[in-house]
Image 1: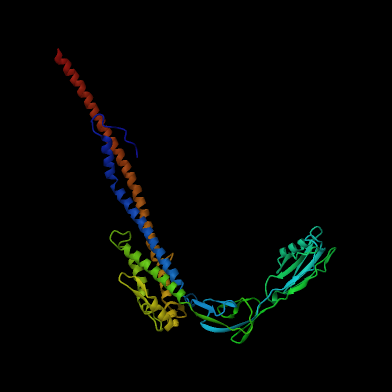
Image 2: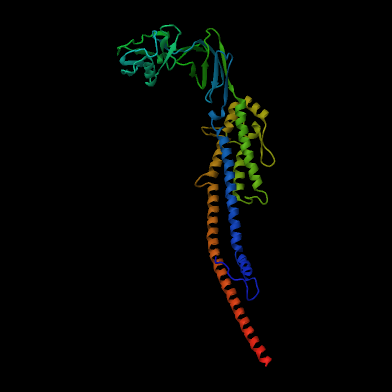
Length: 444
């Protein structure tokens, strides 16, 4: 807008202030529109917070949505100095009698003694064979010492590791030691140094031969390439620590009630956090007061918590397993009742929550309800956010038009007041002239 450059010198009026006040009155619709836009911006932010809380609830529900994610299990060993055990979600409850007959070992060979680490072992090509796979390694002139040989083996990418040890003897303390990268007979190796010439090629002797682990599980003999046995009992990994033939170890796989209860508590906390936010936003003066999204969210989510599950299991209501709805829409979690329900019928509790075949449990229902609300194309939040965005754009367009109108109005006012000042100034000049003439005429 143009600057006001007059000050009421002729009339004595503060014309600049008068124009400013009149323009301010003319801008009142713009002020109201800008206030409305700020409200829409706050509503968009509040809706984003609401969607974040819905996402947190969906994440918590996902932790209970399948038999694998719901079914937290724990494995315990009666002799953890001999064997430890860990259960994954696909494990089944049960007890297993296990005996560790022998541990898996990696092949380890040692060379004859060398006088120094730079002793020449020869040049040429030698091979290392592991499981039928042959690795060729070449030593060139100037890089054919014992240390060069060790480095070449380690840099070859083969499944054999090389080190040099010092046994402390006075004249020939250094020996090359080769160790298989893995335990078990499948990782056994052979080395052919016959391609080396011009030095003392290593001659290897065995420190330990490759061996598989051997154990019995419920009287069934099991062998393993590794001491970490993960394919003998479904979903259970056994870590063999010490062999002790004849000593029976009991491994028990049970429901991990604490882990399942923790997931349930996460679901309840996320649900209550959402409902607390909805309740707060419904209060008088709240940013989303009266917004239909609040009622939609509250209706769809609370119905999942309250309505009976369509399945045929013993438990069809959350209240039956310790999740009861209180005044204000909050969920209360009774851990004692939940543990009792798990102990009485684990499968029925699981099926109350999980998606399994045609069984669409509560966790699945929470997730699908939230996905319907938050869908990026057709969800309630997307529709509402787009509507607010369009309203804000419409306000921007109206403000632009109003600003142009106000600017034109100010220019007109400035011109009118300027004209008035000029007219008054002329009248004042004429009055002064007439007064001077009258004064002269009367003086004669």
